[in-house]
View 1 (cartoon, protein in one colour):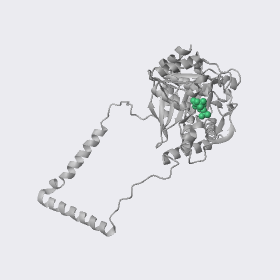
View 2 (spheres, protein in one colour):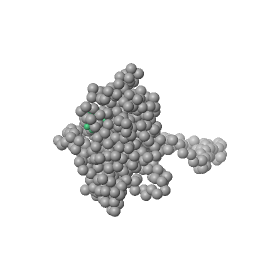
View 3 (cartoon, helix red, strand yellow):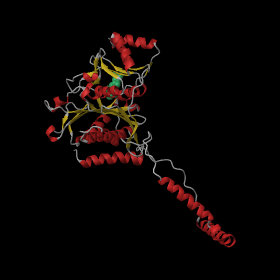
View 4 (cartoon, protein in one colour):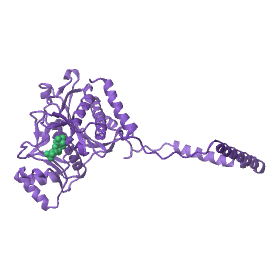
Length: 419
Ligand code: AFP
């Protein structure tokens, strides 16, 4: 199943789709009508006329002004072209500008060079994720054209109805990451048990945990959905499953891909947050921002207010206070899209415990942890009640948690009402 041909096929299909036909599910492009060319006889007559005129002008110039004057225009033109060419060859001082193009791959490689002990293995994991993101993004964009929307007819380990695209996305990620030699464990929201691929002595040093398509219940209305991922270095103790149950602070990388009006990949390797946008024309994620910082002072909260009656009294007080203090509300119901807005614009996202869901709804290891690392790396704060999310030691792969994350001032505004 994890043959290189298979990967090649996915890569080819992803890049063919993005390069040859962005947007790939459409019919054709509108082209302007071809210009009318003169017909054969007319064209021949025109060419002969111009030729005759040129010969006559040259002949008259030669006889009246001599050779130098005759060829003067050519000499001037030649000199100008040579000078321009020489100017171009003069070495310029090399300066890095924000306009320089940097792909995801080259960004990871340059980040790795900053760590003397880095083996380069990690690049393979991120490149597999970027490949999967292109393939999933391509499917999402064809959602109404291909038969990929709707229930797959199965319920996942969370007791939620699986969408066809959940299953397809899960399969794509498994196929892209499965043949990376350093991936020991793959764990997904869609699979009850993790997939154990390689022992540590066989090179399986990393665990990759992911939610293949978060927010998929919004797919049929074309709302932004996303893939969330977390990478952990497997510890030497216990079984590989136990070795994976580590607190989020141990993540070596985390990120998400938002399939929205553009396909955006946000990544942290523990050294700030970088953002890339998929350029459909060249099939590459291109760096658009690095060292992202969440703006403070944005009075916007993002929560499902329909559940307010089931919130703690402290949270209810916070919402009343926010209403009186000119706060605004934004809630998409797709965590990747909601958190992405908070990352770029500020404010706070919360999915607290409710009477129906006393442990919260979101999954600790492949939703809350990666988002918490990104938010903290961007200067924000991420808590579950009084606890820092990244300090929670997981007891199980699919453990749920409550979540409050955003800029420090906005998270603290909530905590001042709840603690
Ligand atoms: P789906 O993947 O089933 O659409 O769930 C999305 C999600 O896990 C997360 O992305 C949202 O923040 C949250 O659920 C929305 O939940 P509510 O519909 O209960 O507000």
